[in-house]
Length: 138
Image 1 (tube, rainbow, N blue to C red):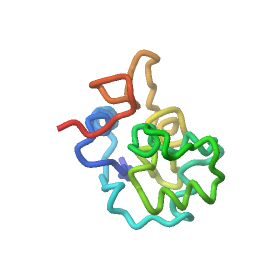
Image 2: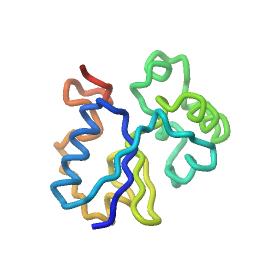
Image 3: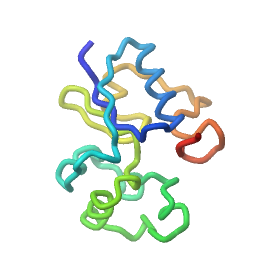
C-alpha cells in the first residue's frame, strides 16, 4: 500500500498506538517529526478542512492547557501564525494519504478512506496514561 505520511511528536505514546493501528491494517508509514518540520500557514491550513479553529490545537500543549492561549478567541490567521511559530500547538497527528489530509486521529478523510473504524470506547486521541490528550511519557 502507498505510504501514509504521519507527522508525530517523537516519543508520544498516543502516536505510537495510532501508528500500530495503521500498520495492523497494512498501511506503510513515512513518519516525520511534526516539531522539526518547516511549517507555513499555507502548508498547515489544508490539514484542518472545515473544522472549527479550536479543534486545530493540541489541547495538552502547555500554553493551551494553562489558558495562556485561548483557542476560542482566535481567527484562522492568528491560529496558523501561532502554530507556525510553535508547532507543539498543532493537533496531531497530521496525516497525508495521496491527495487527502487530516489532523487528529479521528473521523476524517484519511482514516475514512483507509477504512479505519474507531470503536467508541477506543481512546486513540488521548494519552493512555490519562483521559487527557497525549503528551510524551518518558
